[in-house]
Length: 178
View (tube, rainbow, N blue to C red):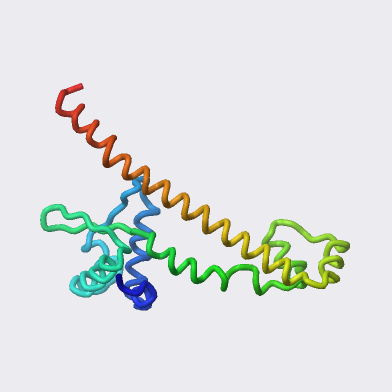
């Protein structure tokens, strides 16, 4: 499998992933897909360029392709991006927040609350406030990642259930006229 970081290092491939993400978010279907022609139009690049980059994304497992006659329809497969997410978590967690940042007005506004003066003073006087924030940030980022992974796994299992159980039953009912 190609190095995921090398795959997403290319701006055109990131643009393609964004187009595929937008397509998946703009539809109710779990299997949202978009044609190569639509991607060419959306990005304003040539069809051979789009096809070349889609091949790289396909080899990295970042996209799924569905063939319909001579047409190819692609959809996003975000699973491999979890490697990138795992690598990024330590950099975007609350590690860099100090007690002053935690008590600041922008952080309080982001958190949806104001920090009362006694709590702000208490946070400033904690000897290891940075350690508390860092640990809390790591736990929150880890919990978010585990929840995201569990949701992705559940969606995958549901898709497999549809393919293995529900689709054959639907086909059988359709043939018997029931």
